[in-house]
Image (cartoon, rainbow, N blue to C red):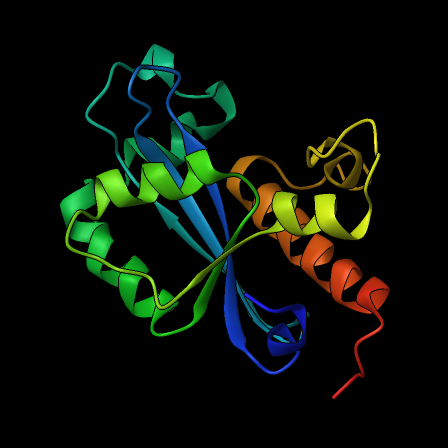
Length: 165
């Protein structure tokens, strides 16, 4: 997608927390609604009780997943929260996890912030979300990933020199 089009697009930044098993199962989905790289809503969080042994779930998530509904009860709420917005994820594997969990769902369009960062800031030693996510240790897992993805999109738009709407 053209960087210029991102300035006016309604988007949703996604963060996932997954089990450590193969394939990974979603434990939590967090969404931020964005317009022009600015957060306009959220975080919206959805906990899931994965069909996996508890030892595959991050210990700090145990209290939340213990009482959470299974994925089939959460899936529709997640797709409704995404709506027709442009999906913003950092890595391609995050999209693949969503697609595996939502096989009939098709995002309106997808932007990968890692690829956007590689185009805007060529030559960086690291394109992971670690540097962004270490700035704020209050969040964990999906919330921190969604927040860092939203911040990265905003920074990339600002750096691209596009006019602010």
